[in-house]
Length: 406
Picture (spheres, rainbow, N blue to C red):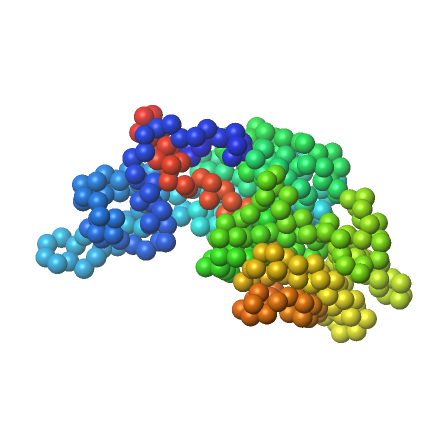
């Protein structure tokens, strides 16, 4: 059962088959609450015969499955039906500067199998994406699924991405990736939609889906080797005109020294408050930290200069976020990324400045919290991106129509 053609959203054809309404019914059932045909007819106001036909179509697709029986009011007990998240599987891949993590998930984004390895994004797109496809094949084998069960692949990259085409656009730390057709490369192995976004956007999707599903306005900030933000506005990811929204790391940091950034500008937030910036600050006072993990270990081990350096980075990030709070008015700011594992030092610095500099109206109910999804944020978010794309009502209708015609 194919939910849409391969490659990116912009290149996917719009549904042309007449809708049968089963897709709309599925949206109601995706809360996984079992319901009978009669209950569905009452909820939708549709005739029982119409509901029955739509339920039958969803049962045939596998997206719906029987889920016990309701209490009998006389005669045979009516059967309840619920969304079947195991009907298909999704791949979510989170590619960082020095790591790769892939999860095979069900249709709720719940990981069924995960594999993470050290890799260098600088090895180039062919090497890295071949690892993605080979690892996907391995996970399908491990879980007893096949490529026919796969409805899409979501990929997060550590650089700017034109979401409509899935191509990285002049990524500072990804030599050889500029303009590379990522969806086409993956689609040579798996003939499914391949959606690509920057890593912070997919982390925002993952954290929102798992920890804050009812929050309409959320700002996810990743602090690691780089710094970036994912913006959830009105319950939806906001990418901007060309996918560049949330590029927080290359905003000029107020009062910061004019340190050269990887983008070529001076004084960017990423150049003065990221992991490498903290490493340099510690080296100046004779403390060696070769990686972000070393910084976290120093802080957790009670190293006071390291804790002070991380807190100062938090203050610098907070100066930029105070402007974001005034502009976007989020109700939750989530701090994630590897440096967020350094206890309260980083978040305390952010809170200190944001609460002190933003207007009381914007901060009266503002929460600034640590991410809860950890290393899974990216893979869950990448899978969520695909699920949101594939399970729209019109694409489900089109898939059911195609299945009926074959």
